[in-house]
Length: 128
Image 1: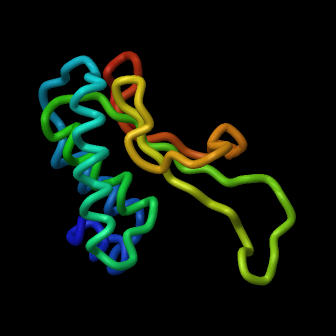
Image 2: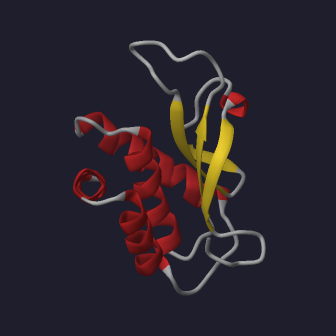
């Protein structure tokens, strides 16, 4: 996760995204809920030990782990509707899904977030 955090702080997101896609191209397997839950536990543990482990870094790390082993994964970026505040000008969030499981970014009312972009493997196996 540390490598992803450094990448997000030093490079524009599209470059990090291309890097993730390049590292995880190859064979594809059906999604597996058991693998998704194991990655969720591993990323949760890492996030507790690394300061600044935001939702985007966690989602990208989990995606690297899952897609690197050939599993399908879908990373979503979204915003929650509502009036911005001084403390929170925009309520943005990233989450990753695989095997019917929200691997990272599971929050109460996740369905309230309006999806702005989706990356990863689609139903037809194409990478976006």
